[in-house]
Length: 119
Image (cartoon, rainbow, N blue to C red; front, top):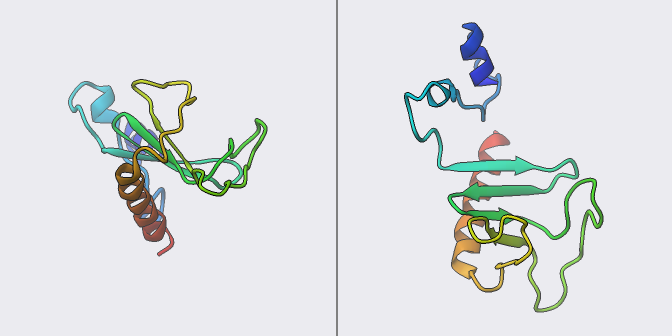
């Protein structure tokens, strides 16, 4: 939203697109990094956070149109999904159990974004 506004020279109202970032300078080759994280939200309400090579999804299932949309966690199994997209672009190897520190850090960052948007 902020990028479209910048392209047409419009100013967003203070509450317009609160999580939007103008990436026009990046598209014009003037900047390299605009933000270090990206939050996704599925049609079913499932959040995920992408940072660097990693993507954390807060629940199990697709969160959308493909089945199963939601999967209940199994005892001693993962309660969410974590993928290293540089090694696993198809998201086939869930690393949730093997990488507890990344899960902890990403979950905290995602919850911080969600809380900030509720105010």
